[in-house]
Picture 1 (tube, rainbow, N blue to C red):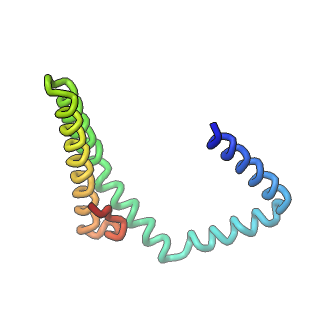
Picture 2: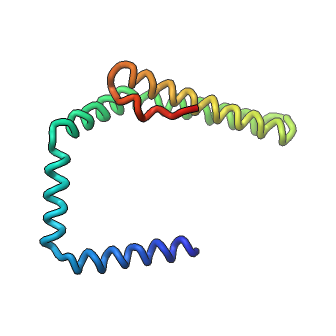
Picture 3: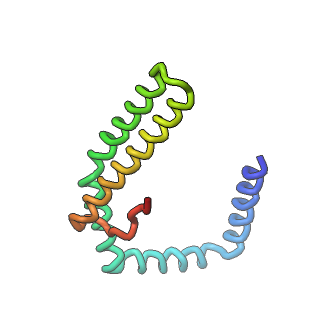
Length: 120
């Protein structure tokens, strides 16, 4: 509840400060952002991310479905709760690693920057 109150207070503060700055300042900020957004280096990175997403988006649901199937199979088994927990954690880690592999294949093919790779 405290988090919600702080969130609403933050929104209210932002609104008040934003209205005091006025429309002119908003337009200045928006104009500056658009100048940066439309620069060649930024657009090159946007194109890389779009290419990666288009190339790899079909693989992600397959990996997630496979991971979910492993978890459901584990939970439906006759194993002890501890064994189920261990198997579920293992399945989640395997799924995360498979998602990393999808990401790395995209980075290796030049579709996205490898600087976003998750460390294990």
